[in-house]
Image (tube, rainbow, N blue to C red; front, side, top):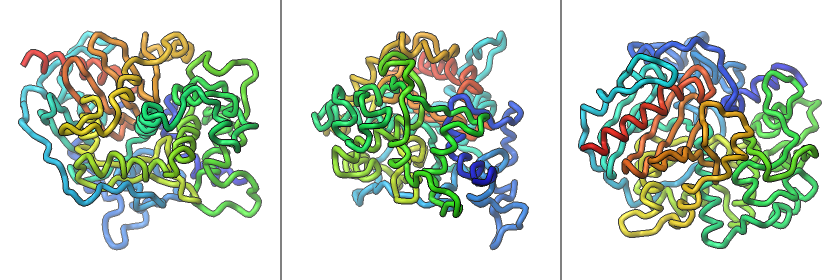
Length: 438
């Protein structure tokens, strides 16, 4: 197996690691240079030195990343998430210019910053703020506009978790059942004796490494298994996400349920549990039960492996506004115009959070007292805020006390959320506090 083949296959998964870094300088976006002005993929055909291909080792590294994040569908196979034929539901809009002027103090700093200034510092492609169901702030940059589908990275996990929590609330899936009882093919894997809940909360004891600096780490095999590309002649490993999950071994030094460990394979295991329990892929279930009933403006999509399996751990793409609609649905306890789209119990279960003790063992110093539940990040602050988070800056932030949803799509050159949390988390809180005073 060539090193180059491993590099290009792992590049999509690299963006999903909470500890990964793209290695670029931490400088604000220059908003005078958008994706069109840089010339990537412009022309018919584009110049060779401005062409991006999935087979490029750096197709999702700066500076190409700022184009790719809005164009995954042009580079790899995908599965659509149908938005139905009923048309888009209007998003009430009453923009408040003062939102952008809200100031806050970044974590670890003595200087203040405005919400507008944070937009550039965090390399935002788009930010939407909704208050009481109404859009009060909307801004775009880079490759994004109101009609563009943008990759949400590991926000996908939270969508997968939302589906899982729905099935648990409806009784389709028992979260105390061992995984092997639902998926016999995983009986001999690390997942076999884990419960569905332990998969959903990522407290499985897996002998699995996502250390990208280690050429022998399991994530490399995972990336190869999930690739839609034809493998080299000498490759005889797993050829799908499902096939790879069967090979994951247990860490005998731990017990399931003891510690939180952020591993993308848990989301794909949940994706398989969903498919086996419902007879539908995550993409098809989401389309039928949510996306086509939410009044979304555009079809969304997932990237897929070589057998068409949606990447439940990081392959979802949608518009900023449609993600706002999804966030508002969650804030509203799953209800839309008097119709219960998602069971309220599913959302309540996420909001209560998981084990803070188990979460603390993962060592997230910037997220003290947080927890992880149903693949959502729960702050346990006095606003009850919780979030879907993806690397390079993707976020759906839900603040029930402030009746607020913030969606941010971004192309931060550093993958780890720690690169932007200092100028994001206090900003979200400051906007929530401002809106509560209005």
